[in-house]
Image 1 (tube, one colour):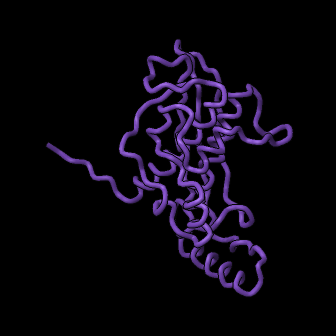
Image 2: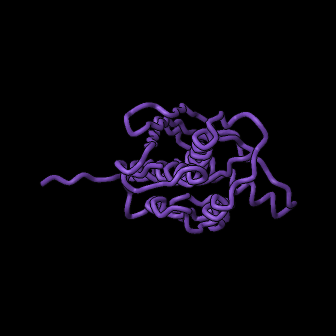
Length: 209
């Protein structure tokens, strides 16, 4: 009997993929009922991480130290150093039960020095961007329109509850774990790796809206 080993790089990639699944599951819950088993769903959503641009963990550490040092002098937000920024690319598709495409998106984005917190992790930026992708694709599925036009809308109460670590609207979303919420936000301010606050769930499987 052979045994496969999951190394640190694979674990980090799974962490990013899990955040995407969690964000998609919570996002589509605004319109669809989410079920556990593929055969019970009318639409199946599948997302694939096609590329993770690694964050330079050392530069992220320097940025965090610089920001924390500046905050002790004056309470003014300090942009991170614009070097060693990471990124994320994802492809996603929603298909009906008979295999017809109901929606698709090819998405890629890089971190920026202003809004993306520096975290001492090779997937720090990809982790931060993962929920953005999940939000964009789920908005497209829920509204049937591009998520990039129009004025931003206030998130639904179930989204707010889930983002703070509360119970998701549908039990099927529990397989991706609950958002670490405020705990992770606090950790990000000190540059701590996302794996410190967001633990990989013990059960991972298919789900469909």
